[in-house]
Image 1 (cartoon, helix red, strand yellow):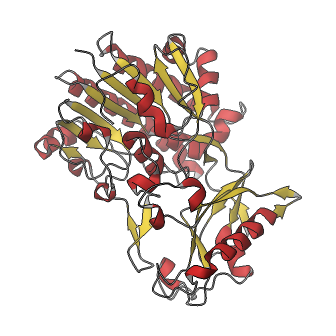
Image 2 (tube, helix red, strand yellow):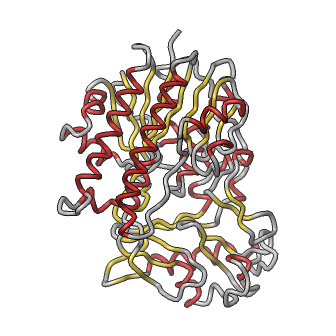
Length: 423
């Protein structure tokens, strides 16, 4: 019986993948590209891993699956809650195909792992390895393998060598565990590498700048990723339907611009002087605030306990803030590329829970949303930021993917090669 496999490379842009494949740094990937179709793909909005992976594995818009970021606000509250798989409002594909035994390894935004026909090791934001696996009876085995859910970010230049070694170790352990599980009976598998996103965030300049002292380390890591791809694929039967994709692209962060500082300066946001934790510091006269990089919420009476914006004021206020953001210039350069309303990008019964606006930065800029910062712009600690328009989607055996250039349709593409997939 035919099997289906998805390999995810978190945060890998189309341009980087094809560049390293063409240069022979990723020979297994180059071989794959000669036996199928690849396309640039757009992400769900905002270009956040929790949102995008949820859209990929449900084949649904965020308005239908209800995930709008790694964090959200509790009802009638400014208190932030972190992502939990029980918040997903529709079924992932493995639950729709419960007759098929599925092996899931390191898919972000799936913690805690839910019951399924198979084995599920959840990815970021799993707090501990022993809590990341279903069935829980395999927890002891997984812990003893030395498996790592994630790596520790480098907080100084001196920590980068340690960070690079952790990336390599995490990849090696992920492959070891994956091969062990794939040596058992399975029908579908979903295997994700997240170190590709981490190295992009912290060492993007090492890819673009050949004189960067970590350039060779960056290239070597992707060579190891390609080797891992080869090992995983080699374990599949020959007729396995194979898809490979990323959840978003990556580019240089450039100048970091704080949207909340702008909103404070322009009178849309007022906060207590750190007398309250985070968003609980928002005062009742506030009209809008930004959260989690790209999301902008109106402080509405309907959503927040100190909300001041009436429903009748919403459209005009959205227009004001959109005009404000798109007017921002630094050194004559536009900072904000576009601002979407939720009606423009979300479709489904849970769209009302989305932020009212989603902003995207121009090239050379990124966003920050710290409530208490006094600075409009700073140098971003992260070298790379997410992009929405240059993820990649690959399908072995396909002639073209012209109908599947949005990641929400990735599983529809897979179904052209694996007809038994229920969506």
